[in-house]
Each structure stands twice: as structure tokens, then as C-alpha cells.
Length: 317
Image 1 (cartoon, rainbow, N blue to C red):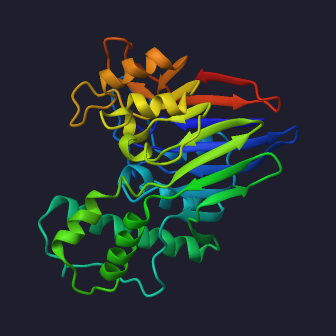
Image 2 (image 1 turned 180 degrees about the vertical axis):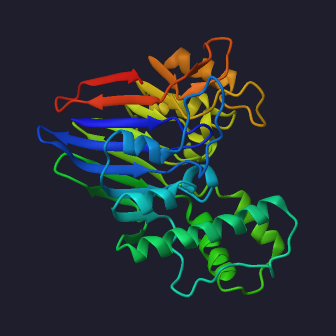
């Protein structure tokens, strides 16, 4: 049996995937780690990813994937690495051995540029901690890989131009060499488009985890239908198009979002939710504000199981 647990980490992503046998969990995967700190909110059950892993008895991680460098996707990684032995960590880019802390000489006042600096320093610390603990660091490679006899994963890389531009800029920043400000800004803004997309397959069923890749960008990929879809970008207006939804045709759509009444970003977007409900049998949010077609809700998470005969079951917890 395969178990998927979409953790309620508020405005962020953390997805726990575990293959079970009669003797218990045999293989454990974690895709993204949420934020380093999740603000408590009355009426919300959200919390940091590490608490879900501990509550569910996760004592090791065979494979951790980080989809892209935004704080709501990698922020919880350090706490998890320090608490749970992790065999392998995969990301689109791995810092060079001589990567330096990017310090006070970086003087831009641009919010995206400074956000990129902050995340590169966090990512450097993550990889240094992982190496010190014996975790194998792996740059993501496209293609299909068998994780176990029954569970496989396909890694769908971003566009080549985005990958190459990001790698050049990251190397330059880590080595404290001069950078072009316009190019640095562009790379910072392209971080969502640099998300690694993962398609897991088990018992003939397909689970598509999309990071924050925008729907119009995913339309350019040769995407195949899936059974379970984690919606990109937390269900905001860029997360889905009618064209992509028709291509993917999921049976279950999951949105990782939060239920704050006042939000800086429109997540989940009412129009996107309505579009999904018209085409997808089950549409679930880890938590959400009240919407015209969906009552406000909060859960510890969404649990989906796939039996060895391919039967899918879904529940909120």
C-alpha cells in the first residue's frame, strides 16, 4: 500500500509518501518541507512539517526532494535533517564545494533579490548540514527512476534556459563575483518556474506533484493524465487553466493553502476552485477560507491511500 499525506503547513508544501508492507513502512519519501515557522492561528490546525513526521512515526527518510528555492518549500528542512536520518536529498541545483556565505557586500534593496540571497544562504546551510550527517546530495536528473519494486518516480525538469540561467547566477553569487542586477532579478522571479515536477507511479496510479510551476508553463510539457494532482502555486489564479485540467484529468485535486480571512495572495482562488469542482470528483484543501462553492475548513492533513490493486481512498484528518 502507498500512503500520501499532504501536511497542513499553512501557505506552503510538505508531502509525505510512504510505501507500506505487512511489516510497516518500507520506503519513505518527503517532497518539500514547508516553512521554518508556522504562525499559530485560531481556527487552524496547521503546524511545521516536523511535527507531522514525528506524530506519524517517521524515523528515517529514504529520499527527500526540494522542488525549488522558496521559503515555504524548503524552510523546514534543517529541523528535519537534524531530527530524522535522511539517506538522499535531491534538488535541481547543488551548491559547489567552495560556496561562500553571501554577506554584507550584497547591497540591493530589491525584495526579490534579497529574498534570493536569503534563500541561497539557507540552502547552503541545508546542504552543509546534510553532508555532515552523511546524506547523499543529488542534483535532479530528468527521467524515470525505480525507488522500490512497485514505486517509481519521473522527474520533470524545468525549461533548459531557466535551469542554465539559474545555475550560472547561483554559482556567481556563491563565489561573490560581480553580477548583472537585471539578470539577478530575473532569476529571482523565475524561481517558481524552476520547480522540479515529480510524477510518482504505484499500482498503475499516477500522483503529480507540481511544486509552484505555473499552469501555462506546464502546458508546454508533454504532460500525461494523473489520478492525484497537487495543484501548483497553492491554488492561486496562475495554478490552473482549462487546457491543463483537461490534459491531466485528475480524480483527486489537493490544494495546499491556508484559511486566513485576510490574505496578501489569493489562495485558493474561488474561480480556480470552481473550475476544479466542475471537472474533478474530489477537490480538497489542507485548509481554506470560505468560498462561494466551498465552506471554510482546516485539517491536520489530507491522507490518500493506494492499495496494491490500485484502489484509491481519500480522507481528511
